[in-house]
Length: 594
Image 1: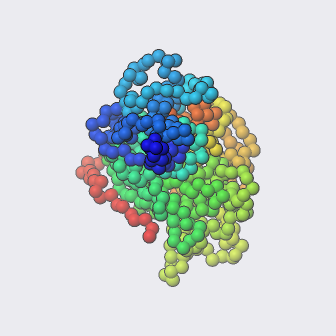
Image 2: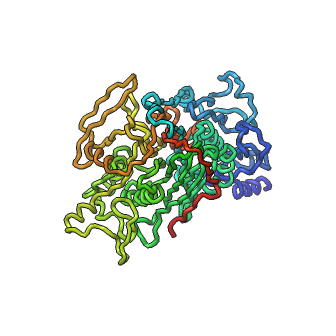
Image 3: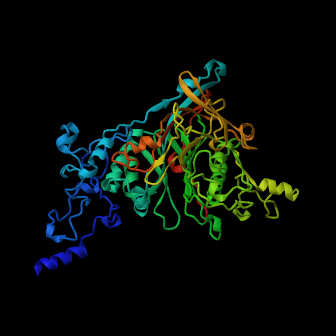
């Protein structure tokens, strides 16, 4: 009788491990500054470091129909959790203990040292062991040799050249709530690698190893940001700004920068939601910062923008409208007194593939969308859904943004100024979008030598490139070239000093090489552009499946991080004047839309 009551009590009070949300994978970790586990630089330990209050669980509590779960965080049935550097992307440490030689890493005390070693079921152990032996590294591609420095003798004694090198990281770190809400995307993953207590140290370790000067993070969960991510990054020397999604969405975008290298001069949160406007009823956001390099003399301001556009592959109209709002805000804050624009770095998860109309619009500065199916804007799907053409215009005039992606100026009567010509001309203008920036992509979206496409995300259902770092290239930058993979008529490869360069020549009325050159000549080019000095190479889909795709034991997001190094060249006037530093307290914070 007593045994029966105990079983009933257990069934009503003990959660089953098959349900990730019931497992409280999102359970917060408490502040514990004295913890010195596997990651001594983290200001808190993972949840697994603490055993539960009841460390002994009788098997009789579960009974015949409720066997002891295998993936409870403190269960002895857990496979060993040995997170390693995701910079090298090694996938090791899952072999059964008797088959491995004991190393210094095994004897190192860590947050999982109290868990006994075990292995997965023997039916699939040979497949997992094979994957564990694969090591894939992401190498650094150095382009500094292609940038010739300007001789200082040409500037004279009044002016002297200066340069400022910095690195930028863009990373979708995968919100824990979104992971649990879309668990079908991670059926390929071992259960233990999906716990936030496992993922957080890996993410922080990767960010620390990348050592970037500017971080653009997407899918940053707000409670994790406030309690864990922000304190950790501040301990690394970063100043952090965050914009949460509107509505009840728990995540947002963050931009963090090294306070020792930049001064914050402006913060502009961007909301895409517009009340009483059906096209813009989604909760995606963006964030824009103006950063002043800390150098001797007056250096140009750098505009850094970060966003995460709508995912829905069938709603390309919403994505274009969201992008137009972001570009309009960038135009507003980046415009200088002499009508030029400051250098721009645009990062984020755009949920669009290379060569798609949305991608081409960013790169080429124009898009003729007349008759374009709404489901083809992002290029994410090949199905027949989303065949409805885009409307003319895409967004209503009440948004206050023109087809040039700038805020419209109103005349004395309160009406927007614009062309009042014939209707045919107006319709032609309305069916095309423009922006006035010259933007190039850090990545070429293919692997040199093989021509295989790069991917930035890879999980159970898809493997695509959706994450980008765009930048304002300096004049004469060797990496500025049109890339439109959907309309290629000729593909050639050549070698320059041992480095393969792909030349893509294509023709499509109004969107080819000539139109790209016309746009560059008419765009608002920054006075001081950026030179791409290097980037961290991406991987192919096959490379990622060799290490069990994403996330895995070493990489705790379903996206790869993007890392690039830039150089900003400018001129310093040698007149002896008192330099005035702009303190961070004077940074202008612009409010978002009501």
